[in-house]
Amino acid sequence: MRAPLLAALLLAACATPRAAPLASEAEIAAFEAAPLGPMASGADWNAPFAPFNIIDNIYYVGPAGVSSFLIRTPDGLILIDGGLAQSAPIIIANIAALGFDIRDVKYLLASHAHFDHAGGLARLQRASGATFVASAADRAPFEAGRFPYGPSKDDRFAPLRVDRVVADGETLSLGGVTLTAHLTPGHTPGCTSWSLPITGADGAAHTAFIHCSATTGGQSVAPESYPGMVADYRTTFARTRTISADVFLAAHGNFFDLAGKRARQIAGDANAFVDPDALQRFNAQMEAAFNAELARQQAAAASPSQ
Picture 1: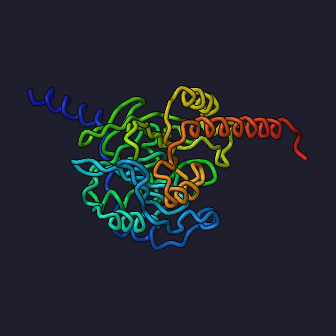
Picture 2 (picture 1 turned 180 degrees about the vertical axis):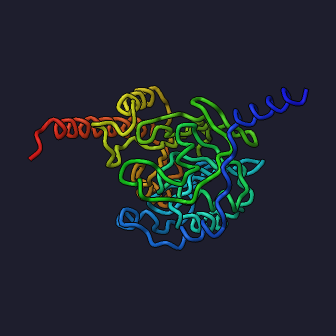
Picture 3 (picture 1 turned 60 degrees about the vertical axis):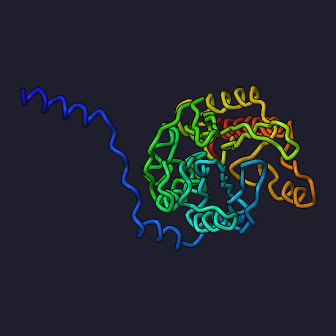
């Protein structure tokens, strides 16, 4: 009896993936103390930005260039994206400035596993003790602390422990607030956007959509950086055309005119972030830019080397 039982236990252990270890305090601190790379510093990605309430229970808590969103529920907080490694202290301070506590974050979500959105997640995971949720296709880069191709392949970040894998259309609920995951691959294989119903200042119902990204981001699409990359982009553009959302938010502030809309909000427009056409305008712009970049890279690949 013992041999078959032992064999069964060993088989079960091999079939169940082990959770990645949580990054150490020393490892996280080293990334936070490192100077910003040229990509981040040149784009002011980590420039301070005062935290504020976007609409209903959604707050902006990131620096100016790389977004981080806090969602309030009666049973705790949900935090989406962690910016750069050097962004995590800013995000924690911004959460506190709004009267919240990082330790009340119950779910930590991610858009994708590039260093400028995943860099601060290990600190936020350690500070909050939250359950980290990510897509299956981006799980390995999150847990390795490195995205394997493209301009950011050498930009490492503190590895994370993925606690829960989310699939396309899967929902996550806390305190009566429900978010839906939308897999929007291309920018990364597991790029994940999130949506949730909200109420505007006028009492009207709205839908917020937090877009992962659909830029090529300097990556090779001809040849593809991963098999099926071009098809993934096209699927994402097609799927996004079917989504109805009138509060468009995204992983970078310039994607959704963060500064401009915040200025209008401060000037008295309580629904400055409500725009029924913004998501589809962005999707059309991203699709046109992708097609142009694909054609450019295909032409370059077909040309004889000089």
